[in-house]
Image (cartoon, one colour):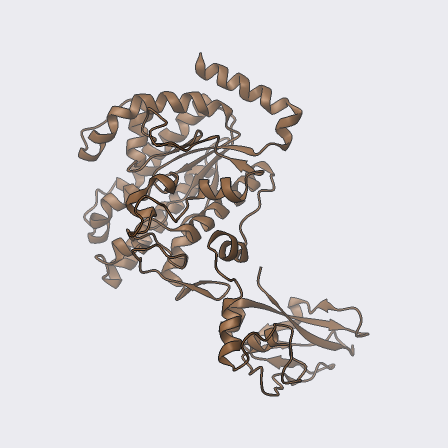
Length: 445
């Protein structure tokens, strides 16, 4: 009766005029990566203040920075507010530490195993399932974000090729499939977002031990194939859940050295105080605020694709300034100070060569000495070339623009822009046309 009443209330909310302007109601089924970090003191708080979390999970980021766009429900901030496996937090957030896909399937279908880790959790399974049944009726979209704990538990075997041959296959075909089916039974038409699983081999906690390059590469390939199986499985459903590509984040952690946002470099090695430039919390396994914002972005992009909504992903500058309290212009400030011009504005031109400082940064030319970094000419049959600085391009976009009258400027089309292997960029004018070209440099959003 309680579940039916929740569904009726949700239907009434959905047709009311007020609901159209209300935040999107999101229900999450997950683990500690989804639970509010305010209650994850073992890793989310600095060692010096172990009860004062200074990192945030994606549900918290949505509540704090996107309160009018999306909501995981009213916040119960007092520890012990719930009688189920949750401690406190948002009413529609079922991010429960320690939960695997296997445990969640057992919880939903009342089939707990004798797994030693599950023994601690299973006593709260019934109450948690009841609470989820009560709350799922109000959801406008359901997010399923699971699997990292499953991979963590089996990573030793995956790394050493001693895993059960069916392990990864069954995670999708049995456990994820059953969780999805349970949601579908209660809410046949609710939009569902299924997240791919981050490759836990990218975490310092795992990579510090499992660091043989060939085996690392082999394990990474297995997990990539597993995530592709998740994508293929989803495409075969009707209605199909939409995929949020969280594996893209760990791909970046593997491949981008250093990891940076707009030129601000982040540290992969955990720190006991959880500084804002850490990718991971101090346990070396759970990602910190910056990476949680990137997770939130993938989820918001998936929701927008599924529902046609306009949830606003976090720009890099917003992450740096508003979420982390950093100065997003610090890479420029460090560069201009190193050039002997501390505090010189981005649009200043102290050497009077016609190149504002931010353009000099992107080009790698000295802001205090006259420069002529362009070669060639923007004339029929010829090209104009320059070689930007890769470090400067982390911070600023460099866009070639053309004009026939020095008044109206438009970007040079990609078809007339070429980039060589050494990074040199060349542009050519339209056939038989005379004109002008300029470079516009602006800080990245």
